Image (cartoon, rainbow, N blue to C red; front, side, top):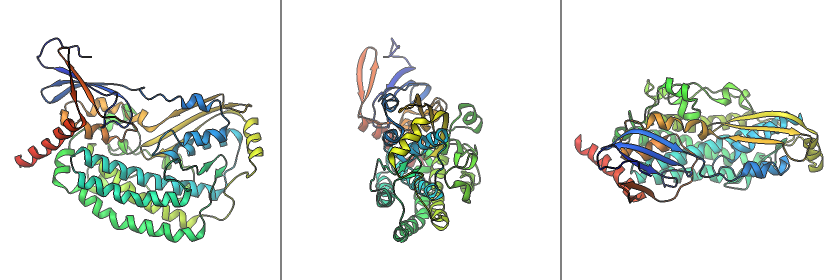
Length: 412
């Protein structure tokens, strides 16, 4: 594990492949000098589940439900992207009403994802009161998603050619109630996250990703927008109902007048995007047209159409973490000849090499979490020094983070 043969700095700390600060198994290797990180490397690929292999042995309608399970947070995004690719190949025209329903669900998914992340970020900073608040208010979006889809996760709402459920008129009042709930909370969340002294001390100028580095590393989503890169699939390549809606890129300088590309700016972008999602859902409710929600209600006809399809296509959507891409190739058979998925984290993870360098060990959890990686986790970090194993537990790393916050407070 460690290449160091002496006790002299720098020394090497591996974190992972399983750790509570990582949402999915991945191995980090840090070269440390004192508390400072000199070099970083990481090795992904620890959570291969064979979903693409399973998908290429199923028909497109079955795969839609498999894509829902790629991520417990971004189910709508993955089903949306896959369905788009198949619809392009098969020449399926999605009804306008289905486009609006897909867009409404995608924005509710963004709200719950960003609030989940906000809670995780607060926890990594030792601010568990804020963690509990963020996850409590997130429940409203989960309740509304359940109201509209019947499920809190694995929504099963998107179908090739449309959506499986309509949004009845009588549900509009309940949705509006939820939107007003979040409108009333936005200022409070912005104040608690962005005007709190400890969060500012821990996140300002921490984990900086410059605009130039963001462009070179091809980051996506809130991670790139927080660095000043105006990029959003919803605006750059409109899909669903986004082409009918009035909105713009959310950038950190809209709130502070400047862009630093640090952890603090990533908080700004995600919180402002919660407010933007509320506005987009309301626009959808006002403009949603009457009509069908499926291109074809007869499943045998839909499957027959997919079976005749030949060609390749890419389905792209703006998931909460950034661009989510599904490539599908079909060759007139029951199952796709090829299906490849590129989730947002794949694009953003290289930024860790840039934003962790020069920071301190105690900052690792919040910096790693700041790009909102999609990673599962367990509860240990193994450290091998001079051939002797040691363990950095979740509690130890969390205590390091809390102690650093206290030190900064005492230095004021």
